Length: 111
Image: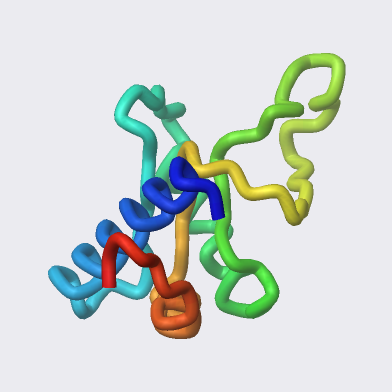
C-alpha cells in the first residue's frame, strides 16, 4: 500500500475505532469531510437508506456524494445507484461492518 493511502487508512481506522468506542450504543456512524455542504435532506437520506443497509448486508455504506450527479447524468432525483466505487466525502457506515473488518487491516502506523 502506498504511504499516502496507508496514512489515510490509519486515520480512518483511528477515527472509526474511537467513535464506536465513545458511542457504544450507536449502530451507525456518519463521516463527512470538513468542507462539505449539507442539503436539507442530508440526515433524512441516511435514515431512509439505513433500512436498506440493514436488510442487505452486501451494502457496506451509503454515500451522499456522487461524481455523476450532474444534470447530464442525473435524470431522476428519485433513483439511487449502487456502485463498488467508494468515495469518502460523506458516508454512513454500520457498526456491524466495522465489527467485521476492524481487525482485518493491519496498519503499520496504527495498531
